[in-house]
Length: 390
Image (cartoon, rainbow, N blue to C red; front, top):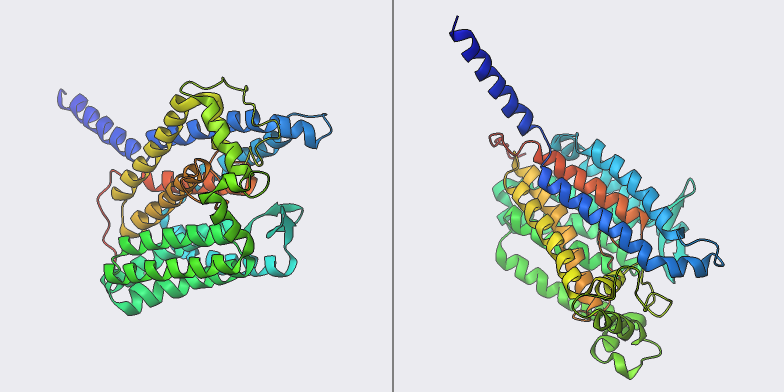
């Protein structure tokens, strides 16, 4: 009879281990929720003056309420997507890719112009940017191609022409939209994913050189983009026009000092700094929370990114690894570019800061992508699954 309790104890330990392996990664989840919560607080702080102005001094929560609504939708999507197996995204890769191209082409025909850029589309009363869907589409398609090509990814036919053809299907419509920031983002993510897939380094270096030439030519053909480069080097030469936003951003950062002016006490958000609740929200973070607060925010992003890559390395199969790495790389590049632009280390790109910048489509998509990473993390404790080259 003494054997029976021992058997029960072993069974309990086995069930506990199985349940643990099926849980999402708690560290990654906490980091996502922390960034989201801080982002919503900072969005309200950065936007309430603009909200008062835009609503005729009737409401201070115009932007917060919309962002909070999209955050709820995004959290719901995160919960649902965290329960889907990676195989679902393998099967959905081509359909999502085709849908994203159709939406991008629809923008050229029926798109709406906001702040001088025609990048939005309205479907059933919902306005969103198809480029956000396209970013995700190229990630899951590259992950699928990585599994399909296997070791053949080192060959020019697959590692360059195969990936490159898929990428151009997205980049061409974006070029017609003159959406340079999305082109740069997808190009950078694509290079990282091709490297993970095993594409020969010489082809990646050649592609990077070609991308630099493309950007130079593309910028030279776009007057406003050329002005951004000039303003980046010498914003003081045109403080009332092209250099205005950069200077106001630097004023905000400098005013914050080490410990900041205090939450809600920014001066630059009172209609001095344009888009203070969007692309330049990190300048308000620096002004209100100071160098210490800014470093903490950067540290949270760094922890999220590193934990995301850890999940990718411990994923169950190659497809999951590349999919997770692509999603985390997208967040990493967006954050790095935004930090660089706000501090004037990089020219203005129009790249938003994930979880912080105002933009319902981007926030909902980002949270949905975090759900996919969490779904992949459920299998982090299981043995690697061998995949056949298709």
